[in-house]
Length: 226
Length: 226
Image 1 (cartoon, each protein chain N blue to C red):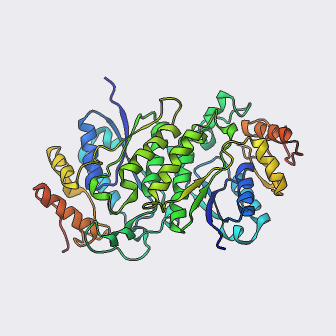
Image 2: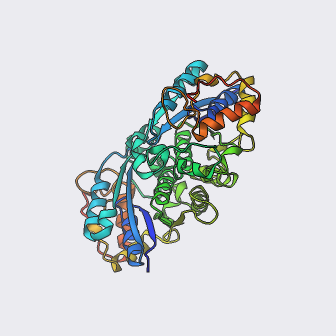
Image 3: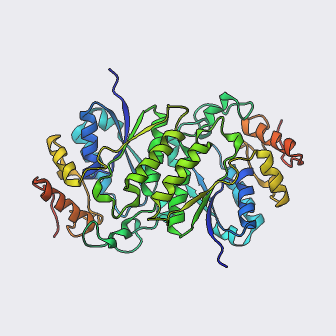
C-alpha cells in the first residue's frame, strides 16, 4: 500500500516533533519542512535537525530547510527582534508581542505550494488549544478558513491539498502524553524564545513547557537556566 | 480625513499597475509590495520601479521589494525555471505549466502580515476573470476563502486585515479601459514570461496582452519581438 505523502510544518518544538512521530506512526510518508522568517536565533533549526536524526531514514532525507529571513523587516514581533521577549505565563496578554503577523498563514501557504509540487495530498501543522488566547492564527476559525484556501488554491475540483491539524482540540499536556508513548526525544526539542545555550525558564514558552510536563505527569528532561 | 492604508500586491504588470493608480485615485494611502519567488527574470521588478517613479510621491517612497528567491526550489513551474515557457493562448490548458503552486496564497499571506505590522486595514490584489481557467488561485472561491483566512489570521474580533479584489469580475480589456482613463503608463509595465529585452509576443501572457488592448480599443504601446 502506498503511504500518503504529507508535508509537516516542523519547528523543532514539542508540538511539531510529536506530530512528526505521530504521523509516521500512522503510516504517512512525511516531508518535514523547517522555515525561518527572521527569528532572533537558530536554536530551533538545530533542534529540528537533531530530532530528524533521531528518527533517521526517509524522514531525515526528506527534511528541508527554507531560509526566508528577508521576511523579518515585514513581520515585526518580539520574536523577530522588535523589542524584548516578554517574561510570564504563556497565555498572558503581554505575550501578544510574540505574535508574528499572519505567520501561520504564510508558513501554511508555502507548505501547500510545496506539497502541490511534490504531489503530496496533505499538509500538517500542530496548533493546540493553549495557543488560542494569544495567537489568532491558531484558532479553529482560522484553521477552517486556511484549510479551504489551501484546498482551492492548490488544485482543480477535488484535487487540492488537505490540511491536517490533529491537535487543535488538545492541550500541550495531552500532546506530551501522546509523545511519550511514541518515544519523542523531548530533550532534543527547543521551545525557548530567547535562544541561549539552554532554555531560559522564564519566558512565556518556557513556562508553558514546564507546566505542560507537570500536567502530563511526565518527567521534564529540559535543562533550564532558572 | 485620514486615507485608509492599503498594501497592494504589485508585480509591475498591467493589472496591478492599474489597481495601484485606481486605489490612489479613490483616496487610499497605498503601499505597493513587489515580491520575487524565484522567477526566471527581473524584468517585472524594473517595471514596478518604473511605474512607481511615474507616480512618484508617497507611492514611490512606500514601495517595497521583498526577495524570496529561495522559494524557487519549493515551487516548481515553468515560470521558476522548470521546463520551457509555453507558447499559445493565455487560456490554453498548456499554460498550466505556468502555474506557480499556491503562489497567490503565499503572496497574500505575506501582504496580510505586512499590513498588520504597519496597521493597514487593507490588502489589494488584481486577479481578473480571464485568469480563472488556468490559475486555481484566482477563482472567486479562492478569493473568498483567502479573504476569510487573512481577516481571522491578522486580528481579533473585527480588527483583521480586509482583502480588496475589485477586478475579479472584470476582463483584462475592462481593466485597460479603466487604466487609460487613469493615465496608467502601460508602456512601462511588463507582462512577458520570458523576460528578454522586449516582449516576445508569442507566450501566453504576451498574447493575452495583445488581445486585451485590441478588445479594449486602446492602442497597444508595447514593443513585441513577433
